[in-house]
Length: 154
Image 1 (cartoon, one colour):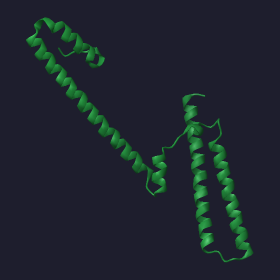
Image 2 (image 1 turned 180 degrees about the vertical axis):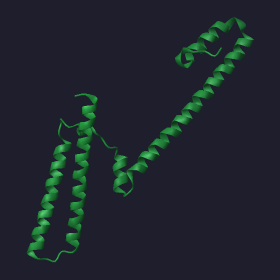
Image 3 (image 1 turned 30 degrees about the vertical axis):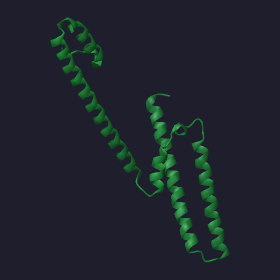
């Protein structure tokens, strides 16, 4: 399969799973209402059993799909933190936003650290070359080897 075909299949698989999960949630809501308003009649008990069996069958089908080795969805792993957010009634998009923000802060910190070390290296190199002119070639070589892409400002 080509990449667009893979992506199309993945999108259709995700859409199908989304529909199945939505149907299961709706069915559980209906079951909850049925339990709350249960009149105790045999017909109501039979209706509740039918709804419960339908839920079990939907869950079984969803589980079967999730364990299908040919499905692209089989390789998806959801971080436990996201599941915890959902269990706590929080929006999983908040987790994503917080995660991206934490990565951004970490990247900024690392970038600042790298810039600080680069400035220290450059200033130290200038001082060493001023004090020890005979080491100028060695210092420039060190700067070249420790610069991204092997480029030197000196």
